[in-house]
Structures are given as structure tokens and as C-alpha cells.
Amino acid sequence: MLMTITRFACLLLLSLPCTGLAAQTNPVLPDAPDAAVAHSTITSANEYRELAISPVATAGTETAEATALPNTAAEEFSSSATDSLDERNPIGSIVEPGQTGDERYPYGKLVWESLAFTGAEDLYRLSTDQYMRHLIADGPYWHNYIASLKQWNMRRWNDGDDFLVDYIGHPMQGAVSGFIEIQNSPHDKYLRLSGSREYWHSRLHAMLWATVYSTQQKIGPLGEAALGSAGGYTYALHCPAPCKTYVPGVTKYTNNTGWTDFITTPIIGTLWTVFEDFLDKEVSDRVEDHLPGTIPAKIIRGSLNPTRTMANFTRGKNPWYRDYRHRPDMGAGVGSPKPTEPEEHFQGESSTGTGARFELFPHLDAISLPVNTPTCKAGCRQMLYGPGIGFSSRLTHFVDFDSDVSMHSDASPLPSDRAGGSVTIGTFGFRSGIRTERFALRASIRPGFLSYDKAYEFSPTKQNPTPPIGRITHFTTALALSSDLNLGRHTAARFVVLNLPVRYRESRTTHAGVGTPPYLNWLSKQIFATNENWGFQTGLVMRF
Image 1: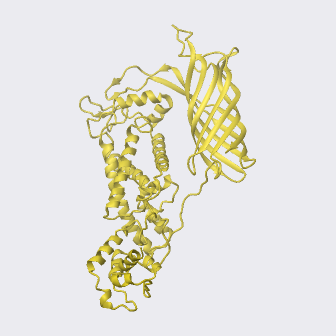
Image 2: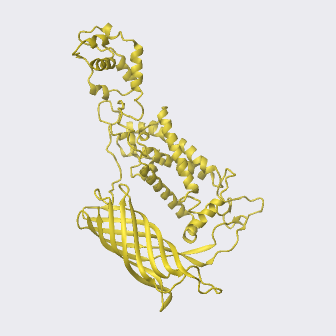
Image 3: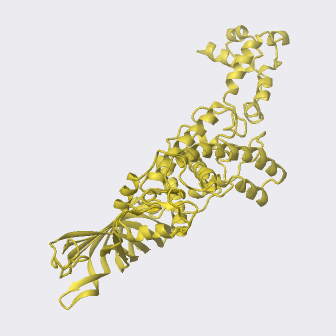
């Protein structure tokens, strides 16, 4: 064992005869280089090789003997050691096993940050597309989603969008989703632009995730086919509706489907990612060398990487934040080209605190809903009271799962096509907010259902004025703002104000048929109305 250790020390120094040291029981190395210096002052592979193959003068050993070791052995050791000196480690120290890349991949964070980006994209589309707002507000989600998928045309390349959308906007989407994957990888987030196989493998991983993301954004349940019904209707190209210059057989029309975005988003998006890596290393680093630690240097770094900046926003980091500056094994030793910066991020705290992971919220539920009574059969409202139970669970540092179920017995004594009998309300979603030692303030969004057990199953008509009575279910979403007054570590008093928009099917419909070119439409002709309902909840929170 001693001989093995001695030979390894000899090989590391490359200056002492192995056989001579092995024969000694207590070898002395008076001139061995300090270990801290060996790790902190090496800033490049070339310097490492120079140090590794240079002879070290030691007491009692001749220089000729020190250099007698074949250069091939020194070069072989130098090459193997410098394999660990890659762009993942900006300070140039040797990466020890277990320092990076040993963490589990945080798939939960990857999904949540991707959902945050999806939400930002969908909100932008919702704010700029009037027809999309109409379809979401007045149309049946699942029917229109499936009808749109059935009309998806994958026999052509172009989907009808402008060059700026297909070849700039969608590649930027691919770059953002790629950076989201990179920043969540325990290993890949430390890599910088280089010719190494590790770097290009990491960008391949990012491209694969960008492919998954872009596919969801086209045909997934939160994408263009579902929210906006892309594929379910046609329109004339470059001719605002109604198109007065439409000529049959001459004017082209499309339903906004094709291969283009499926291909350009991940492939050109990955090239965009590499280009931003180039700008970050070759431009932003040089600017910072001249303006170290200044606001202009940070702004330039963030501005030259717009898609990485958006990816940073999804995880609450500043635009100029870079993971390679915050490696857990980085130190401020001699030879570091840039000092380790304090980690910068937007502040936040888990809404359930650092101790409790779950909450139960038994409460009184009060909600104003349309009802039918013997004295008022249409257009009446009544404040309904009933029991409810809420359950919450911490998912991430910022986001909790949140749910609530309540029941109101005999809410609407008489039936209609909107209400009748007892009502059950169930909503399931997410919440986030802030919490102090005494108070908490949170906002929740919870999609769900509102179901009556004794209502008309469809609207009355002249031919059938009394339809069969049974259970009908409406789609609803709870938008809640809650405040807590902490009574102890595991208890709190809570008061909640909520708005409960409910979608009701109307008896009227839109025009029948598919239509004529250039305006074909395969979506549902059924119209839904949204009715907003206000309420409150109060009760005692139990945390555990």
C-alpha cells in the first residue's frame, strides 16, 4: 500500500526516481509545491502541462535523475489531468469527482419554468387576438380543441405566418425553452461556448426539450390548437376579414397549420442559443473586463442575450445572472479571472413557510349564485352558505398546490338549464404569495367545476318545454385572494375573497354549416356565457 501511494506521489511530481522513493520508508519532499498553489494558480491547460513536466529540484536528488523519467509518461499524465479543465470551471481548477453533475435533475423546476414561459406567451396572444378571446370566452374548450386537431394539415411546409413570426419569433421561443433546460441541468448549466463534446451534447439536450416544448405550443392542451383553435377555421392570407378582394382559385387561404414551426423552433432556436453563448463569452466578457461590476456591463450582458434573459425571468433571476459564476466549488483563490459574485435573484418565500408542507382549511363558504325559487324563476341571485374544505401542499419555493371543495344544499329549489337542486363546487390549481412571521397574503387560480344535481339536462324548447331533470356540470375558475393571521406555528385564521366565473351553455347557436371559402369553420356552433360570482370564505388553517 505504501509503495502504491509513493508511486502516485512520484508520478504527480514527475521529478523523483520511483525506485529510490519506494525503497525509503519515510520519504521527504522538502521542495514539493504547495497544494493550494497547485490548485489556485493554474489558469490554463498549458500552464498545467508546464508545471507537470518541469523538473523539481529536491534535496539529495540530482537534476539528471529528476528528468530521467520519459516525457511520454509526463505528457500522458498531463493530458489526462487537463481533461477536467474545461469551460465548466471558469477559475481553471481541477474538477474533483462529486463537485458537479452529481445532483438529481430537477424535472419539477424544468416543468414549472416552462409553464411560466407558456403562460407569458398565451397571455400575449390573448391580449392581441380578439377572435381568440371570443373562442375562449364563448366556445367549448374540448370540442373546439379536438375539432382543430382533426383539421391539422401536415402535407405542407408553410403555415401562413409572416417571415418574422416563423423564422425569428419561433426560433427565439426555441432558444428560451432550450435555455430553460440548460439552466436546470446540474451539469450543463456551467458549460460555456467551446469545441468540447460536452458543450455540444448539452445543446443537443436543449434542442430535444425545445422540440417537446414547441410541439406542445402547437398541438398541446395549452397550445395554439387548444387556446385559439388554430386549424379549426380558415382565413385569407394577407387580407383582413372580411376579405373584399377574394378571388376563388386565386386568393390563397389557410388554417394556420404546417410543418414550419415544428422544425424551425428547435433547430434554428438551438443555433440562436449557440450565438448568444458566443456573444456572452466574446463580447460581454470583454465589456466587463473594461467595466468590471458596473450596471452598464450588466445591462449589456442581459441585452445581448434576450432569450437567456427571458429564461432567467422564469426562475426569478436577474437578466445578467450566469450559472457558471456561481459554481458550488468555486473559490476566490489566486488565479481566478473574475471574483465570485453574490448570487442575485428576486426575493421570495414559500407561501406555506419553511416548516409546514401541508395545510387543511375547514371553512364557511359563502357565494352569490343565480337560483330559481317559487317566487323568482329567472334572473335571481341569492347568497348561499355551506361547508367547505381546502387542502394545500408546497410544490416549490414559490408555488403551492391549492384546492377547495364546498357544498350548498338545496341551493336552487326549482330546475332550469343553468341551475337546480344542491350544488357542489370543486376547484384545483396553484397559489403563490408572501408570508411574514405574523401575516400571509396569497393569490390563487384554481380551475374546476360547479355541478347541480337536479337541473334540466338541456334547454327547454317549444316542442319540449320540460326537459328531463338530472345532473349538469359547468366549468368554473376560482380567483382567490387570501389573508392569514398566524395564531401559532401550526394554526392561523384565514379570510378569503374570491371571484367565481361560471360558464353556462346558452340555448342560441351561431350559423349552421361549415361555411364557404375563404372562411371555413369546423368549430362548435354552441355559445356559452360567462357569469361572474363573488363570495368569501373564513375559517381556521391547520398546518402540518
